Amino acid sequence: MDIQRGQIVRAPSPMESLEKQLSCPICLDMFTKPVVILPCQHNLCRGCASDLYDSKNPYHFSGGIFRCPTCRFEVVLDRHGVYGLQRNLLVENIIDIYKQQLEKGGNALEPPLKSKETKESVCEVHEDEKINIYCITCQTPTCSMCKVFGQHKDCEVSTLQGVYEAKKSELKNSIDLLGTSNSCLQAMLTHLEETCKTVEENSQTQKQKLGEKLDLLYAILEDRKTQLLEQITQEQDEKVALVRSLIQQYNEQLQTSIKLMDKASQTMDNSNTAEFLIAAKKLITEAKDASKNSHLQRPEPGFESMDHFTLFTEDVEAMLAKMDFGVRGGNDDKEEEEEEEEEEE
Image 1: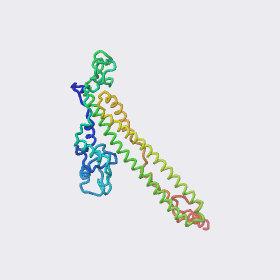
Image 2: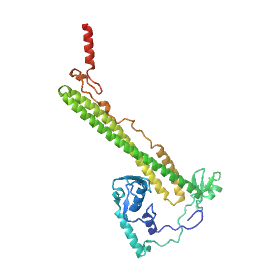
Image 3: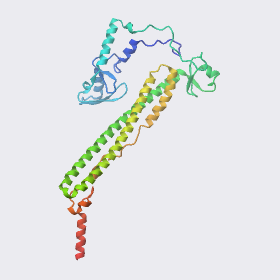
Image 4: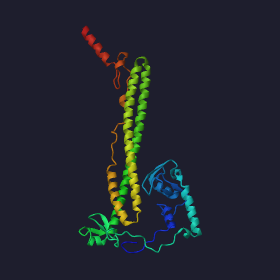
């Protein structure tokens, strides 16, 4: 029942519900085959997906990016464009069955209308009273009797529908905020993965250079070579461990945020106004907290660099035992020769 108008609201039939699920979010009509499935598991007509892609990529470059119209997930296309997306044969088969059922008279799937009204929410204190107002002071749905004679008589109240619309709008904004936060988290995870890969590649490059130079002086440098390799490996392990720790933190944050977003989206579909308001209050707070906590630690600029492990091979053999990263040999010998010349004079 509509609380404001007192009208009986008929629940949608199975066929109506099915048709809603089979509707494209772009053209708002039933999916037109072929139907493609996006990485976020939402579906689009290939034609609508192509139009959306063309609007974002007017010059028809190879590959491209557009956002899912349902969840705003960023879809990255390869050189095949929308034709590289996988077809959802299951949805296409369901559409065929649905159309066949309509041709036969789809009322067979519709249950008979119930003569009784949809169950209404009633006050726990005054069992004969409907919940028809919202206590702003206590932030909870209640009934008129509680306002006049009960525990909410000194509280500020408002219409249930007005608060419902306001909270629903606020929850929608929270969902959008979570979507933006998830995009930032996904971008940071991609950056961290690239950083980890760069650290490993740079480390491998430095190891190769080190090995090539030390092999030329193998007899003297074999023991030292092992020590220097261990230094590189140790820093690599420390950096990779730090980056992977950050990846795990961002993954955990992202999963928590996604679950909260899904929960909020499910709450948006709750037709029970009182239950929605109770759940929306908690979800809005959790969504704001999750968004505030989405900015975690990140590596400093140049963190992935391993250039400080550069080795110079111009050192004389007498200085090989003292060789270290970033030290070019020969200077100490020159100083000793100058000192000897001064003593001779």
